[in-house]
Image 1 (cartoon, rainbow, N blue to C red):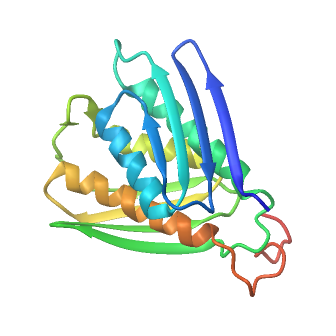
Image 2: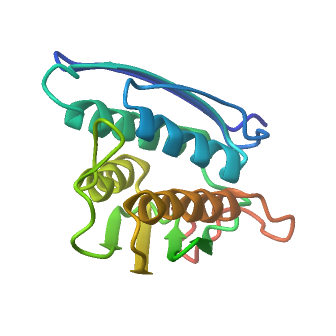
Length: 197
C-alpha cells in the first residue's frame, strides 16, 4: 500500500504544494525561496528517507515568516495523510544527532495528539543566511505538530553555532520520524490499547 500524502494550500500570503512518500529513498525537490529552510527540508528528506517535494511561493517581500509557517503546516498535513490509519507502524521513536559542537535529542509519538516541547540554547545569532529567522525554528515545529497531530519533544542541551544548532534538530527530527513511521512486522493493527491513533 502506498503511503503518500499531497497537500495544496493557498492563501493571500502563500501558495504551497507538498508531496511526501514515507517509503522513499530520500529524494528531495525543494523550493521555498528561503535558502537555509530549503537546506533543512533537504535534511528531512535525506535522513528520514522520505521522497519530498515542496513548492512554496510566499510574500517574501514582507519577510520569510508566512512562507516557513505555511510550508510547515502543509508538510504536517501531508505527513498525516501519508500515515493513513497508522496500522503496523512503530509509533514511538527517538534520535540523537550531533553536529560538531551541537547536539539534538528528539523523541516523537505519532499519537494523534499534537504537543510540542522545544528547548534550544538562548542568545543564538538572530539570522542564518540571508533570511532564516532563528526564532522561527520552534514555530516551524509547532506548525508541523498542529497538522501532523504528533507529540514532539526536541531538546538541544548545548551548541554555539546557530547553523549547527538548527541543522542537528532537523536531522534528529528526520531520523525520529523515519523510525516512528516505519512498519514493524510484529505489530498487528494500530499500536494502541485504544485501538485508534
